[in-house]
Length: 550
Image 1 (cartoon, rainbow, N blue to C red):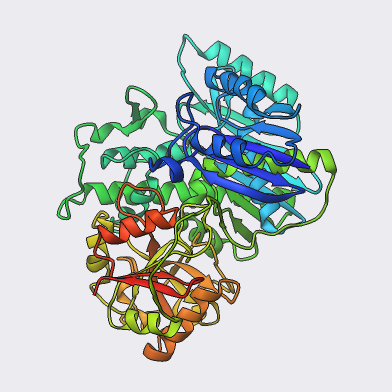
Image 2: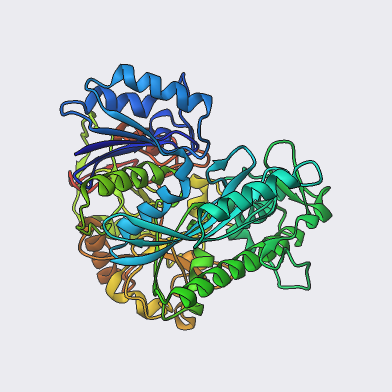
């Protein structure tokens, strides 16, 4: 069975799931070069690529997953698909099940036979144009049983004019879902509270990762409770024109660049990080205690918060967590397709996610670089050269894990400053690292975990290693890490060779792109980026070739 999944909203993506496995996946941004790009009537690059190249066999079902059901674009898209798909097939509008798509992806990727699935999202499915999904808990079981046990919605409007209709809708939802706890009391949610710090520092609401980096510079001081009875304290916030949220006391403090000598911004980032992660911990503890289920999958945009993820594993050591690496909306095309496949076929096979190297665009570009083996690359890195990697298919998610990476020596205390000549990131954002899996516990407090292959968790650096890898240590002595085993042979062998030279099995690893651009996709993109930046070496592991500038 072949299912075409489409997520047309921000971080738009298209996939083909064939017999339960991903046959094709790509994000719109990788083709248009517009970060977090969406589909539109005049921009369907990634969808048209699939329709033009992957109809050699019939498409049995199409599933569209956008958080806004019955939008004009979704209706237009369905008509477009009817014209473009060569065979007759059912087009399924999955837009009322946005959180279910997130939950489906995380559960089927996790490897768990049964689990709780927590979705924490900024904008879930729109319900009767009155409210949207915010946080949801499901009990997930094979082949395709997702039982909602908790739903929190944020209200588009509240007050005398709207309260009666809002209460009627909540009452209706409770009647339809008798075994599910349902709430809808605030115009905010966990993610929107968090983004109030992101808008304060002049960033796009989808750039909460920048706030996360800044939060480590803040200090814990007496501060207002951003949540009351586990709901956002609406009295503390205001809404910009549109859907952005701000903190009232700082309404005149919004800036575009964070100064190093003004602590208001870092202190507020610290508070939203601290208080939102405490709310997430409350939810996880409540429903693991209530259900007795010890496996928990997290997805939705907030689940990319590596600091919160560390907070969870630290405080709940008896819970088995899976943090979905494609937690943003790009993953919902796959999640919706997985769900439809399992629902129809009743397939109980478990396909645990092994890697994220499946963002696929074919290359027709030939490489004429110099021959070079892994040991030579390790030596160049030890000599403080910046090495970019282009290998096979790109990472599907937002984190570079070795196929589209920029690597540097983590021992260099000026690593951040040096790599930032290329990346041009904000001063407060840290760099992650890749470490040989067997040595991770020697450098980081792993909380008894053996691996963290997708860079979804931050870990404390051990005190006796702080001075050994200063280039990847954040101001709070933490580091977001990727543990690497032999399943990524080129990166594992590189770390092995680098350790032979330096006695350190760790490299700084950041995404192969420059500020504001999506991850490099094609070989041509890689060469162009190499040529216009200060990257010293462009390495093609599969071809055993390099480009150098000297």
